[in-house]
Amino acid sequence: MLSFLGKRLLATIPVLLVVALAIFMIVRLTPGDPAAVIGGNSATNEDLDRIRVQLGLTEPLWTQFAIWGKGVLHGDLGFSFFLNKPVTELIAQRMEPTLSLAAGTLLLAVLIALPLGTIAAWRMGGWLDKGVMAFSVAGFSIPVFVVGYVLIYLLAMKLQWFPVQGYRRLADGIGPWANQLVLPCLTLAITYVALLSRVTRAAVSEALTEDYIRTARAKGVTELQVLKHHALRNAAVPVVTVIGVSAALLLGGVVVTETVYAIPGLGQLTVDAVLNRDFPVLQGVVMFFALVYVGVNLLVDLSYLFLDPRIRY
Image 1 (cartoon, rainbow, N blue to C red):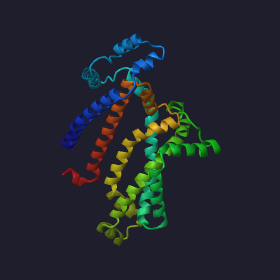
Image 2 (cartoon, rainbow, N blue to C red):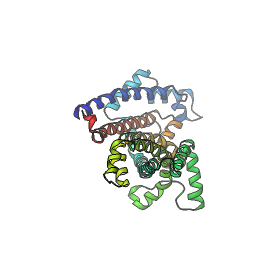
Image 3 (cartoon, one colour):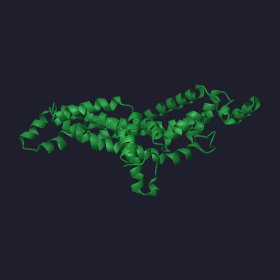
């Protein structure tokens, strides 16, 4: 296990290096000048040159990357051009809304998708199975922002069950915090329920054709136990893989959802950084997302050792 973990950790180093280099070059080569945004319309050429020098933008690209990369290795992501605060501090301030939204979405998706996909596989060809397949196609086809606006119109404006926008921190109480997250989580969860239920259906339906399922039924094991302890357990590896990928992809989905619901999380911070050409903030947020992505995939790889003992050997 230690050898497996060591190899996976070593494999993350080139991945993070490529991500760091790619985001640095993309940000620098994208049209737009932070000095012009900071200086405003009344800034002269001399003012713009002075701002660029202060921001370190006049240095060669490789020098800028070396300075930034050295700081990243020491946990320093630099300072925001516009807010004049450390990027790590900004990420820490915006982390709670994003993690709350991602965790709530993933929990909601798993609780709905696993039973739905399992029952659809059990009753393959029936009306529930066809309904799950139709829902999967619709869930993939409808953009997240469209789902968000429809839910806002129906559940927030018409029925007035939930607030339209905003975020309440966990320190304000579990009730207000959860109530504020229902609509955003439901918006994101629809896509992931469609994905997870379809994968669960395929994995469980394949497991139900195995000999050990027929043996369990011949021994008089109830259908619920067959589905829970035999079919779903043996279908766990592909399902957990998709759950891990979904958890990582949620980081991209929160950008749109946080914008729709005006949630002050990392997604909104990313959008503001793009609009303001705030290079350090954009680079820092992307690196943080990359670290989370790599960490989630590492946990998924480690889970294989417990879900399938054959992988240990």
